[in-house]
Length: 487
Image (cartoon, rainbow, N blue to C red; front, side):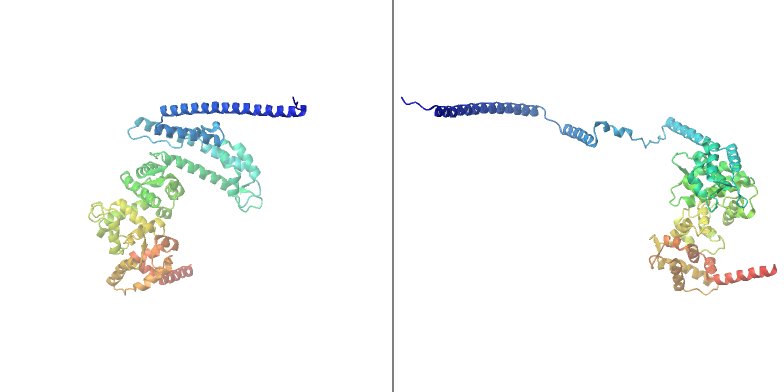
């Protein structure tokens, strides 16, 4: 029997062994794969069964989507610690109580009153203002500029430390810089600074006083609110001591109308308290506290007793039938009686009337517009009357429509009518509108000639004054020369 060599025997054995190992591994892999496949199949069956059992509604799906979006968005923004960040946003809207919520309304009124009282206590009183003046005077730094005492920034800060907490807001670098002018030593005037403080205190006091009449608590005053304010202010104004109490209602109406005519151009029926403080009307009204106010100042002040009596007296004189209202015929005698009938027709078409007659309040708007023709609010009033087609502009037709009435009046008075073409060219030359074919309200305001243009179109006396302006100027010059010679 032939025997195999040992080397060959070992090689065959290794081959056989490897084949067995590979076979066993393959069988194990197949077994394991079958087990995994069976496991996955069972999981899939379970999931499918659960999904059939747990079918979700559309609402539940939307809620789940929202919850997942919120979670992912919060994670993206930096984690769950920011999830409740919306809770830190302060509340900025508080619903006003309804008319039937009496308790809430009373609570709101009481809280506003307490708030305004607290703000009033934070203002400087007379004693504190006097103490501030003494401190400023004590720390003045020579040399004086004329009659004015001056103070440096270092001394300014020392006064601020001694003046107290209420004065702290005034002793800042910004305030000092506002009052610094051309002093070679970098000082400011003590008097100017003290007047600045007084002005600020007065503004805050006035604002608090006006806010007490702000029934709605929204920062504005209605017509009735402002009427109550002025009515209660009358006893504190020495210049109005001579007014009879029976005239108070007419005086209040006259005073309030100026505020609303100029500060409420859209006729909303309310004015912001900020606008009242920003305009000069309140200064004019409170000027009546001066017992030594000159006669000229009183006549120039719309709120003075002579001015109010003048306006109301004119109204009574025009009211020939004494029914308390003015017809177009009665109003035609206003001023010099030279307003054109075409313009008066437009007044009664556009303004509020009662059975074709004008009441005192509407008359006040009319007077304020004609006496203040340079003011934008007055020009807006007159422009609305001139804009017969409501186009927002005046074309050649509109100008001719009103100027024809001027030409007719000139014929009645025996004057030679002026050519409209010449007047039209002069008007466009004066205004210089953006569009050479029409004039807007803004064009009139920007030109600074709005009062002259409107006078030419609505008033024969105004047109005559414009036409003879050179002669009038020459006559004024001659009269002034004669006065100098006499002197």
